[in-house]
Image 1: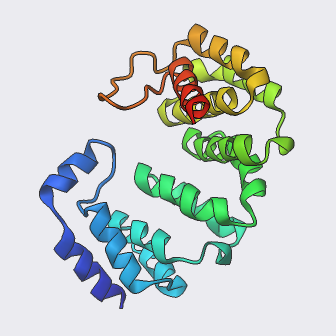
Image 2 (image 1 turned 90 degrees about the vertical axis):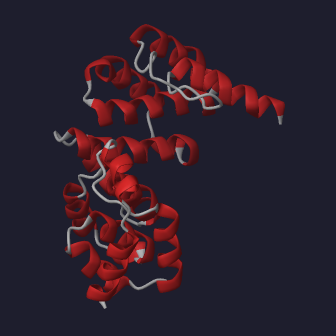
Length: 219
């Protein structure tokens, strides 16, 4: 079955899609809409997902994350998978589609946030950002702002992006900390000049916070 699925993924390969994805560090050429359609047809098949993951192929791993059973993975398995998932899209889907649904999410969040590998640490920060909205009681929000203020400016790319998202989410979800979050963003100027397409919100935290709060107030 693995060979059949890999053959189908190979048929979906498109050179133009690959060229676009490779600019973002993702080494595959399968349109994600077509990948999701294949996953919908296969449905949940955890054993197949594990075997697809083991191939190391990026498109196969993305498909695996769509057809796996998130709660079936143990914490050590998820930790190993994250450290293997160097392609940004695989890393993102693993965290968002699998780890966030896992009973081990909090344990992994604490472990990953303190990890010396900045890519692993970025996953911990992504889970922390989820808690900013859904489980703020488990967090020391002022302490998080202290860490962001001290470390975000010089953090490596993906870790910096994850910390910036956390900063913005604190400012959006917690009015009492909004002024400080905006002030940190303004002083550090992280992603201030990030090119933003028309109609999209800038990732610069002060602009991001102001825009989302404005939208929420207008509802």
